Image 1 (spheres, rainbow, N blue to C red):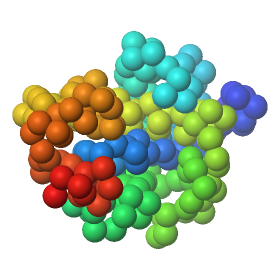
Image 2: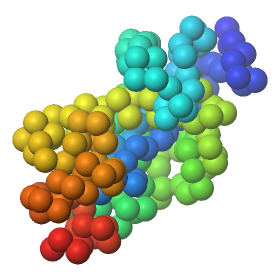
Image 3: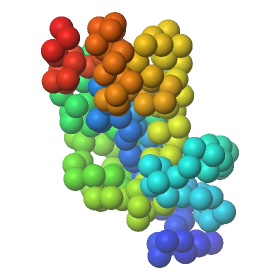
Image 4: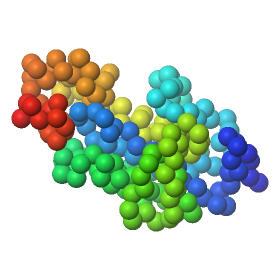
Length: 198
């Protein structure tokens, strides 16, 4: 039986998928998207815009989502970002996430203004959807957790840029690392702050 949450009727008889991405703005690393179909009984999970959650709360929700939801990830590499541009690379990551789901959704709600091409179901763009729609918030949370862990692992091999704390964004620590060590293979050459080091 469907339950009402956030003012929405939620039922897995009609599968609604939420999609969000993380990593459009950083100077380094891939863009990561997640697609999530929530179960009926998700109301115990703290679902909010991932950027407004503490690291501890986000990690807890990430585990809960992974335990109960149907989800998948998609990514676009630095090479694809430089070749396609960040907007189209983000669309590619989102499309890959949706197509990787083990279940085909009936409808797809996407955070933002755009809808990627060639999705397997009708889709609706929702501006600030991660703050108003639980399935999009869930996608935001697990995408951020995955990308943060990925950037942390890259930081072990490239320790000069502070990626374990800035996730590739253009912080002062990242800028200092670039000034002293130049770029590495995980930097986005098409981004203006990085192009000057090429």
